[in-house]
Length: 120
Image (cartoon, rainbow, N blue to C red; front, side, top):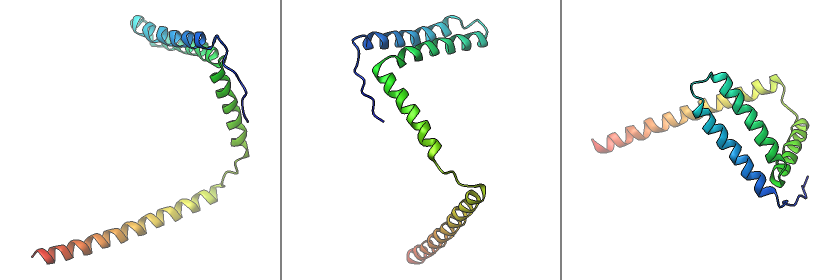
């Protein structure tokens, strides 16, 4: 999917509004520090939702939305492994890791022994 969007002349103004809203949320959270955390979080969520809606009205926001919708479509196409396949694959990885760990431990011990013999 490709998006053929052109940046409108108001995109810069929209981004300024988005950044201003984020700044209002940050400053407001500090200013209202004596208020309940619940009210501050609800205020931040509301401001973030408005900022998100404004950002989606820009060319970059529209492109992001198309990407999100395309990603959801692709996730639906994925063939997920069954529980048995997942357990079997996990066990293969665990066994392989243990074997490599034992091999490296043996090699380290042998080289340590050879170096100690060479030094002594």
